[in-house]
Length: 261
Image 1 (cartoon, rainbow, N blue to C red):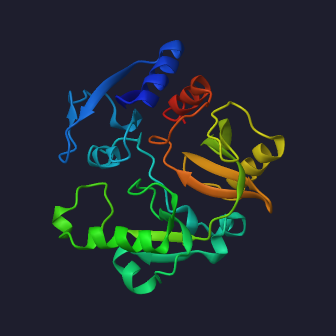
Image 2 (image 1 turned 180 degrees about the horizontal axis):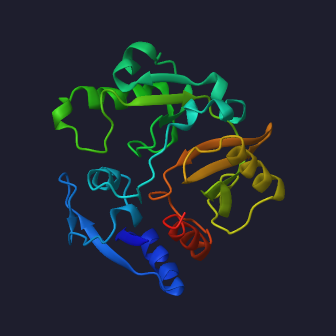
């Protein structure tokens, strides 16, 4: 597998794991708005290239027909097998950004907000209805050709759910249908990155993978413990998700094996 890395703190950690495994890689910068890489990679086999860095690299990977390249995901909220396990999935509101001012009442209600697509246009966070409306209005006054790539757009589909008290949150990395590593990243209100997971949470995550086979050759799944039990928070592109305290040596070895598989 040929590894192409964009220089971030997390990819530096990944590079250390690749060094320990004896796997070679090259560093590249991305030309803003253009999306080209500097230096231009010399690729021996487009069918055995993987990229790690910003989510926007998927466009370059698609243009060059790299495989696995960047593993884009279908929106997790559209996966019927997961619907019973989603955090507030049954009560979610879906609307495009342009529909927010007309559909959302400015009544002080708090909502957990995130784009449906795994695009990183807006990180998942809690906002009041008024804050969401004002955010939408700031975007809607712009012509669409004025909006930078990777930013919220008029047609960005959003998911809004009622905030739920979360007790613990974990991120797990899935390769070829198997959870290969994990990390605690939040304990109550404290952000804590530790390579640990409750036994039932690990089993729950693997069950989520098992009931939705073929979702993607590799991806990240975030789960949480609530007062009502374990829930699936979201999935993320494995090439652009933070590593926290994952076992990167194990993860890198399994991803490198995707080319052989």
